[in-house]
Image 1 (cartoon, rainbow, N blue to C red):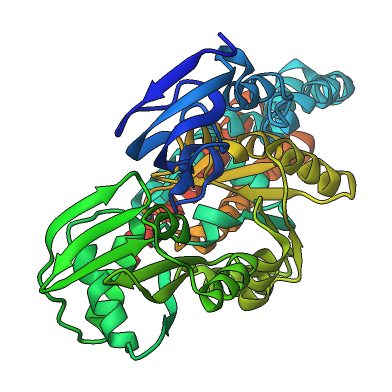
Image 2 (cartoon, one colour):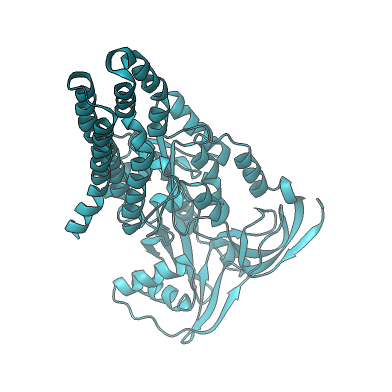
Length: 480
């Protein structure tokens, strides 16, 4: 109940929304916010249900429980959000349905001219679009197979059709355009210490840690060819940092809050650097040697290697690109500039992401949204086409029409190519069916064909349409 105290330990999931009243912890909020970097929480900080305590122990004064929590409210909004696709019918089935009256009319109008057998033959020939009820699913199945071979899971066949109509692509920032693991930017060394010493000590302290920050520090040390010394007597302190012994030195690695908790003075230079880093959307890890803060390591978000190429290829398709992020203005603007994207929305709440999608749709745009977090799920449901990545939150992958199975954006361009080829194949299929049936109609009107010859031309058109539907598979096998 609200007001109750809840104790949560390392490895446990926080069951309520509330305020930390005692203890410190490092909390994985990725499932809710999409941010891969653990959040440091202490007394007075707010925490959310469904997030996980990676390390530390905290007591939480409950504010919201059950259906009142932020995670549950997002789910409730998602369940009551109108689905763009719910009332959407596949355009080829719409086309077939509209042919019912013309088919009947053709028979009635030609009955006095060619008699019952001829009129029935013309009705049969005119109804050739009904072959699409057979050919369209086969064509779709072939393209779903081609997509799966390229690491693309298409859960809703209509998305192949809708993708060809998309003229605007919107990306979530964190976890979609950026990777889980950050990378080391600058290394700040104070007093007589060197950057190499600061980095090697930090890598030694983080040697047995598995979180993204530890991996980033170790990777930078490896890239610089530094040999990390052996760390002894390693202890993790309350979710904020590490205290190890390296040779004769006591080394601490962690946040400024961890340093303060350890009773160490934070140099003014480090405070200035930290403020600037946070404004830039970066993290700062301090390194202390023998009870003195000796330096700091700045960690930057890592842009996906394939992101620039994918953005460039989408722009070559004359598609405007947008970024939507819950992050601050400056880091979002910086990311947009580095990727060559002109449009972005920063500091956006989950429900506002969906409103921005609707705003773009109201301007006449057909929107494809690419996201990976619970906070993206409402926008995913609102978009004309929704795409997520394997490894994203289960809500995002459940909601999305398309899932990129290699956990990257590499196949996004291929997906749009498949959509375009699918549309071309469907149109060509209709064309190749028209020709034999025109001969059938002409034969009935001018050569006095009966029903049987007209039916033969009808089935010839169907066979040609089926052959056309198999061409993409045949061409793909030839290429491979």
